[in-house]
Amino acid sequence: MRVFAVLAFAVVGNAFKPSFHLSPVLKKSSINMVTSVPPPKEKPLQKVEAIKVRSNYLFDPLRDEMENEQINVSQDAMVVLKYHGSYMQDNRDKRARGVDKEYSFMLRLKSPCGIIPPKLHLVLDDLSTKLGQGDMRATTRQAWQLHGILKGNLKTVISTIMDAGSSTLGACGDVSRNVMTPAAPFKSPEYEYARQYSKVLAELFKPQSPAFTQLWHGEDKVVEMEYWMKDLQNEGFDIQKAMMKDTGRGVMTTDPVEPLYGQRYLPRKFKCAVTVPGDNSLDIYINDIGLVVITNEAGELEGFNVMVGGGMGRTHNKDSTFARAADHLGYVPKDDVMDFCKCILAAQRDHGNREVRLNARMKYLVHTLGIDGFRNLVQTYYGKPIQPWRPLPEWRYEDWMGWYEQGDGKLFYGMNIEQGRVKDTESLQLKTVIRKIVTEFNTPTILTPSQSLIFADINPADKSKIEQILLDHGVRPIEQVDPLVRLGIACPALPMCGLAVTEAERRFPQWMADMRGMMDRLGLVGEEVLMRMTGCPNGCARPYMAELALVGDGPEMYQIWLGGSPLLTRVGTSYRNKQKWIEMESILEPIFVFWRDSRQPGEAFGDFCYRQGNEAIEEFVASYK
Image (cartoon, rainbow, N blue to C red; front, side, top):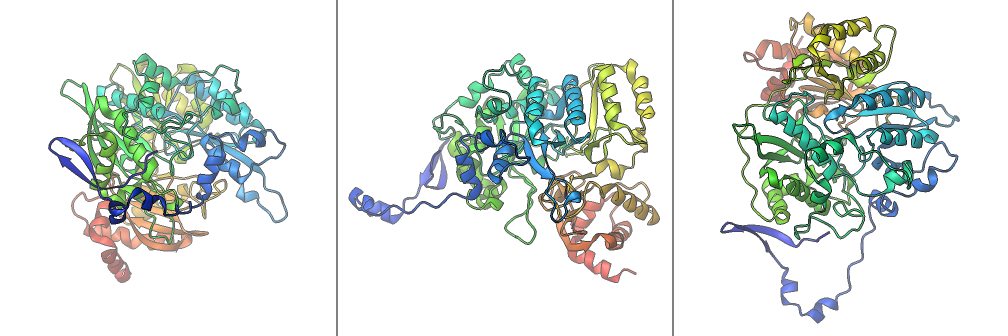
C-alpha cells in the first residue's frame, strides 16, 4: 500500500505525470536532520479496523466461537461474520425485561446480476423451510436473504449453498458487495455485456482469504465452482490473472493473502453496478462504481462510461454524512476496464477515511477532492489520462414486470413481490408458486432491484399454463397491481434489524393504500409516484433517490424527503424531521394538492418538488385549508 505526498497533478504533453510539493522543512533538511526528529506516535486503529487486523484474514475469532455452545457470537465475531455474508439478529418484538434474547442469523447470498439457477432456488427454498424462519427475502441489490438461522445450523446452511455452486462470501462487510445489473434477460449484445461484466467485477473483487472455505466447508473438501465463474471460464476470461496483474503503480499491495485488498480490506462497503445506455432500473447513481456499456453500430463492445462516488447511507443530525449521487468520471476502453476498476478500488483503499467510519465510504473521498481531483488521483494509479464521458440517451425507469420477449424466441415474466418477502399466506402462496414454476418448467429466476422476481427462458407454449398457475396461487395479473406498489420498495426494519428505529416493510402496504386513497380523493387517479420507506437513515431501500420517501426518525416518526427524480438520477431534499406517522396523510395532502394545481404539463411529482423547493412548498402548505 503506498503513501502519497501528491498534492497536485499535471498533464505534460500527452503523458500524465504527478507533480509533488515537498514541505520547506524537507527541502532544506539534511538526512541527519530528518532522522534526528523523533517519529510521531502512531494513532491507535479505529475499532473496526483493529478487528479486521486481529481477524487473521477473516478467521478469528469465528474459528473458535463457531465451535462453542453459545447461541450468539461476540462483537468482534459479528464484525468478521459480515464478510462471510451473515448478521446476528434477534426478534425485537419478543424482547422482554429479564428474558434472554433469542438470537438467530440472517444469511445473504452473493448472486451477480440477480441470476438464480433452478437448482439453487430449490436448495434455498428447502433451507429456508427446514433451517430458517420459513420465508425468503429479495434484497434491493438482487440477492436472497434467509432469516432465522440458528448459530448451530450456519455451517450446514452455508456449506449446502456452496455445494449448490453459490456463495455468501462478500455479501456483506468492507469489500465489494453484490454486483447489480438490469434484471431484464434480453439477449441483445448490450444486455449480454452488462451481465458478463457484472460477473467479471464480482470475481475480480472477490476476497482471496481461505477463511470462507475452511470455516464453512472444511480444508479437505472440494468446493463446487460458483455458477457465474463457470460462465466466465466458458467465455474465455482469466479473472485470477487479471486480478493479480501488477502494473507497478501501487494498485497491488504486497500482502501475501489479499494482494488487492490488503490486510484491512476497504475502509467501508463498496458497491458496483453495470447497465446499458438508457436503462436505470437498477439505480446506477447510488454505486461506488457504475459502468455503462458502450457498443459500436455493429453491437460490438467498445468500452464503458464510468461513474463514481454514489452512496445512500447517512446519520440523522450529522451534517458531515449525506446521501450522494455518483459523478461522471469518464470513459475507459474494454481492454482496460478491469485494470481501471482496480485503480478506483485502490484509490479508496489507500485514501478513504479509516479513522471516522461514518465518513469512510468512497463518496466522501470523491466529494472532498471533487470529481476532477478524484480523476487525477485515479490517474496516478492508471498511468494515463482518462478519456471523456461519452454522450448517452436519456435514462428511463422500467421495473420489467409482466410479459416480454427475450429476443431469442423465448419469453420472460416479471412477478411483483411486495417488499421482497416470499412466504405463503391463506390468500397468496408466493413461496409455493415460485417453487412450482421453477420445478415444472426448469426456469432460472432473476431478482430485480425493486425486490421482485423474473422467470426467464419461458417457452411461448407454456405462457398460458404459467398464467393459470399464478392465478391458482393468488398472484394477480400485473395489470391489477397498483403502480404505487410496483414502484415502491421498503427495507425490512422491525422486528429483525438492529438499526431500525421504526417500521418500514410491515407498514409499507398500509402507506401505499393510504396514499392511493388520498390521491384518488384529490382527483389524482392512476397517477404514479415513486415512493420508498426505511426504518432508519442508513438507506438500504435507497430512499433518498425517490420522489417521496419516509425515513425512520424515531419511534413512530419519519423524516420526509422530497424531490428525487422519477428517473433516479438525483438525490432529493430533506423536507421535515420527526413527523408522526399517525399524521402523515394530513402532512402530505397539501403537497399533492400543490402538485395537482401548479405542475407543468406532464411534470412528475419529484420534478415538481425539486423545481419548487422546500420554501415554496412550505409557503403553500401554510396557506392550505
